[in-house]
Length: 209
Image 1 (tube, rainbow, N blue to C red):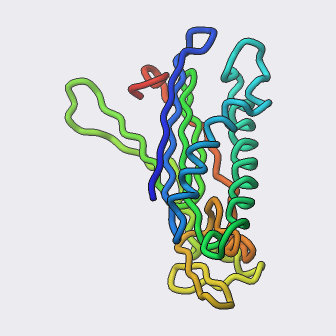
Image 2: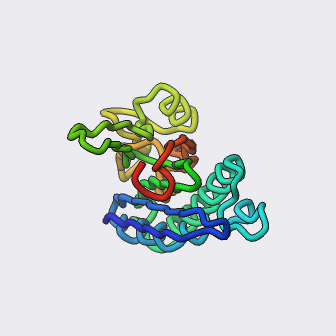
């Protein structure tokens, strides 16, 4: 039920850009939901109007513009996935996917995360066998106090580290944010991502940071 995509290109100013993303599907039709995200999210990110804020560039130099464009693209992706989860037969409403994306441009790494597919940045120095690592994303779990508050306020039940419906079938989702899962989004599960930008430093642009 897992899907992923990767692409890279050189922008008009010579900057090397790359983007990678993973989706982990869950539920009876999780493979369909993760595939849908894989097919649409690259287009939504690159064709987001906020990305076109600087003429001639595919990805703008202004980090805030990139941040806003990724946030807007994920909002559209969430709407699309909700519609996909609502149509068809019953199990589709209990199917969804996580989504974790990294976009590297001009020495900055922009990340977006929904769910619990964790992103880790590893760095190494020439001649040093040790690899330093840093966790870049926060797992969205229902036992987190803020997540639990939102879920319970909308009628969801948090128990045994899962989100449950108070009706049959008593499906439990072990994350508090996801794409799809329309039945569980009705009781507080969210598709709003955490979006961040970090500076990679020398050598980080387009590759080995």
